[in-house]
Length: 444
Image (cartoon, rainbow, N blue to C red; front, side, top):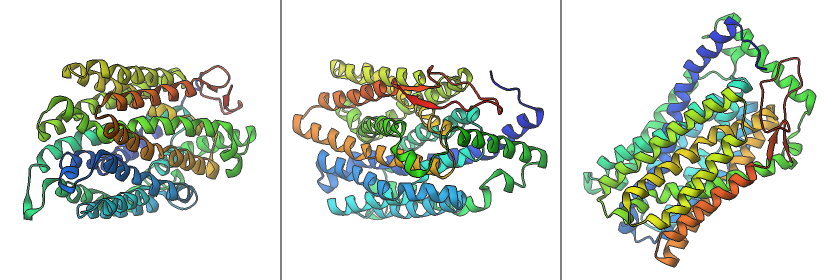
């Protein structure tokens, strides 16, 4: 049974959400614009530079290598040092490297630029997830993560609209795809300057919270952490060796294989199946992103309302898999292709905030920060494997059917793995009373 929340608690939850979530959402929008802009730039970039699909896929995947190397240390820095200072550093450096990408001329330069962007952005996502655990109770976390995660589809929509204009310009003898990197590399630098002055590391330091509300959220989070430690106080090594962490790594890896393979080739898929001009293709990319935004908010809200986690991941993943596996049968019916791509995006991304709320139910402190980094960094290797596999299959077969089958299979296996994750032995989660033992994840 969910505990009653005091009037002070309700005010604190609302004030914290209104203060932090819009700004974190904006940061993620800017983050993902800089991550996905290469897919829209590639509507002309590969042709101008002579890249094959495989070369482009490998370059896109180089991002994941840089990401992997610096992910875990950065997440620990957020927990032990300062989230706002570290996030500011991340945004300024990735903005600079995004601008640098505009000046590549060879495949090696492209690989190096993407590696540097990945290295700079490493630990942004797990860092924010750790940061949210400093402010939101377990019962509010899926909604908070969902609000943050909607920055992803919003970024795709915004990037699509911007790209439809930027790709058509040719200033100073620079093609539009180069200007795409330059223009979209400026906002993260600006936000990086603002972050240290706007964000607050922990509730105890929040002068913008009234004293009673500051005390309420601090005591609630401290009580949750105490219950977790009483049940099992994980060290970093124990968290890494826990089989639940291993399952989540596999799930995230497969999800990223499909999602990144789809995301970085989506404009190309649409262009090849429709023959439409680049500016129109850029606008059509926004349609699946809109579905993703709606799916995230609805599924995150419903997961918190019901307290259920597992099936809020399994069902969307399975349905997204079916949509992609059906695509080869309808490739000559473009309207149905857009419908299936839209459904798959809405379903796939709806499970992300729920999936990332699962580790926070068990882990806390430095072990949680390190585990978030481990899950995300190893899972992000799917960002290397997925785009490369899609590019290889496109080059090898000359058709898109094999790539669609690969993406659908990744989602299907990920859904099967999530079905083996149990929460409290029943597959459901109820908010624990502070006097009760915390509910823990367990793998059957």
